[in-house]
Image (cartoon, rainbow, N blue to C red; front, side, top):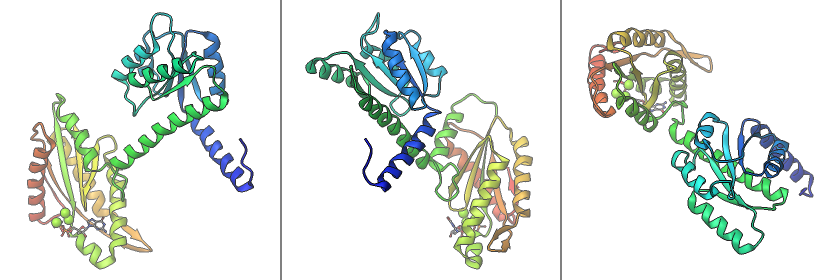
Length: 315
Ligand code: GH3
Ligand code: MG
Ligand code: MG
Ligand code: MG
């Protein structure tokens, strides 16, 4: 299909090129007992740059999928040697949900009724789509791309939902779920710090909201640089949070304090105007099952840090 107008052709081709570039990192697994069928599909997939995987049966399929994180789509035939593809799909779905793996069921049923029954059975087992054999190449590619793009949309939504819009840091919701996972684990130390920029209202009032935004963004970059492997978050407004798994309070305080000093030394520059800013930090390693109760302790210490003159850390 080639669109008529030049602008349309250009748009179509540029979208295709972007797609082909992305496909280089995407694996597609073909499960079919017939070598010929597998080859037919993988050679089509290779034409579109996909990484291809083949399996003649469903043996250790869940392991195979776990070991190959590039696989985003599985195309599975219903007539496998020892089992039905629909049953395999039902089992795979116990481990790989629709937001991480797309599945297209397939079968060679030329009769319309048999093929619509196969479609219904596959979808009921947890497949996302169905391809009847024989298929034309356009239909094959349309279904493959449609299902891959569905996963990409979900990934985009997930990223957007987990990030703070201004700074790109994990937001409160994401932070809570990450930290609660750690809190349920049996770790020797669990330390949490709550940070609040000092007199930030004055920054906005004196230099404008835009400059305030720059401070928040630059502060976030500095925070990510200091605590890259741990969980960090913009909690809201000018408040930030750091969770340090397996770090004791005694170990955490110098780490956090060196960050506090780095903030106090930084010039936050916008349009040639530089300003200084400081941060107060409350830390705790008293842990409970829920992040909310740890936050309560950290907040009490943050309050003391503010009360004690700001630009300091209390643990
Ligand atoms: P304290 O040292 O006691 O924390 O004083 P403060 O001025 O920082 O505290 P306060 O809570 O009164 O002010 C917080 C300010 O943060 C007020 C609000 O306008 C500002 N703020 C919150 N979110 C944003 C944002 O996204 N951008 C900008 N520029 N300012 C923000
Ligand atoms: Mg505040
Ligand atoms: Mg503040
Ligand atoms: Mg305040």
